[in-house]
Length: 205
Image 1 (tube, one colour):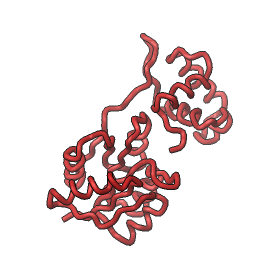
Image 2 (spheres, helix red, strand yellow):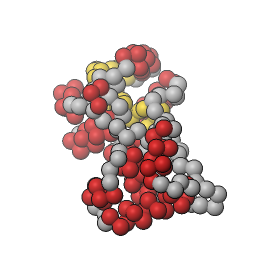
Image 3 (cartoon, helix red, strand yellow):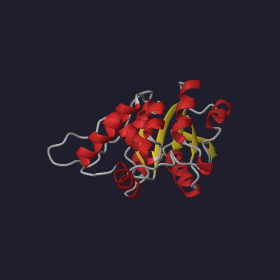
């Protein structure tokens, strides 16, 4: 039987996942945490086989950062990242952090158990990438442009984005110009506001 740690600040979600997973007879929930702040330490203590990790947890702790920390210290632990937000950067960032799967909370509990079984059998499960709408004839935003866009939504300046991504400030400005041309916006701030207001990028996580 696989032992599971659930990290989510919504008690009802924890309850539902516990019932669903334990109902299969293949999983036993050994712990539940509302915050990802010290998730790596709890993994060292509880030694779970699988972690279900919410992106946004209590106190503003990031599940994506916790995923990276756990995978670096305990690479044998399987991690499924989940979110209730329809955010377009979470799934690729979860994969980059070392997660084995990403699931939107709008999926059924049966789907969660299917993904959990698949991950424990060595599989991986990520949704189809979501893309920002661009003008007809334009190519989708590149991965690097999406990185710049996410940092723009956090209100970082071009210089701060350049330092964060280890690129030149002129390169950042080049990416911004490309994104504006592709999306039809005249100002970077308008594009950032559009992404945040539609829930496609969450600047807090």
